[in-house]
Amino acid sequence: MSKFDLDLEKNPANYQPLTPLRLLDRAADVFPHRTAVIHGSRRYSWSEYADRCRRLARALVAAGIERGDTVAILASNIPAMLEAQFGVPLSGAVLNCINIRLDAIAIAFILQHSETRVMLVDQQFADVAREAVELSGMRIDVVDIEDDEVPGEAAAGQIEYETFLANAPSDAHLSYPEDEWDAIALNYTSGTTGNPKGVVYHHRGAYLNAPSNATTWHVWTCGMRRP
Image 1 (cartoon, helix red, strand yellow):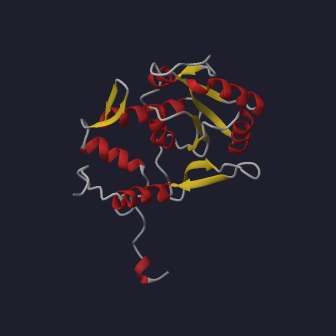
Image 2 (tube, one colour):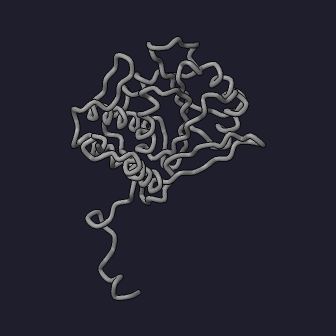
Image 3 (cartoon, helix red, strand yellow):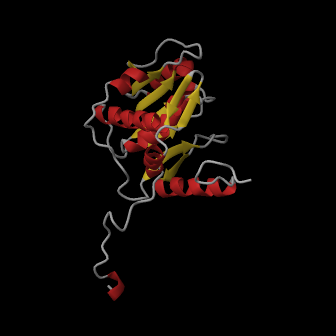
């Protein structure tokens, strides 16, 4: 140990693991009333969006999700998909977004390989999700995401998404990464020449991708594009 290592232990004042979860906290604190989500007739401010993400996290914790578990979602570009990007990692779990174009056999393989514990399912894909869970032979808690904007199919799960959020306990603990190398997401390749391969993303990489995109797109912190 050199002299530069003495009395320099990590603490909350001098070190925080890089994670995009802190970006959600900041947006809700700095721009609480600014619109964050628009979907049909629905509008959520940053404060409302952050609250929904946190409620999803607490609902997952109450459902038995622990740090390092996998939570999958099979959904189109709807608010629940956006909420899962923060809500699932805030529960300590790893998010697995499944390609909506896959068939039941491929989805079943992903569910098995990722050891999915909970699956959020857009009602448009209830039939293929139901078949995939059955093919996997696993016990997976399925949450149905209903949407008045689109036609639905018969429910695939045991509870509807809004009810799942409404039942979230207010005292459930939110989880931030203990190390920025902790996994935040698990994405699968197309499996063109074989079974899909799982690709792990960590909190640090996901965080650094955000300012990289802002720089590439010339986006300033005020939310306006550079002239």
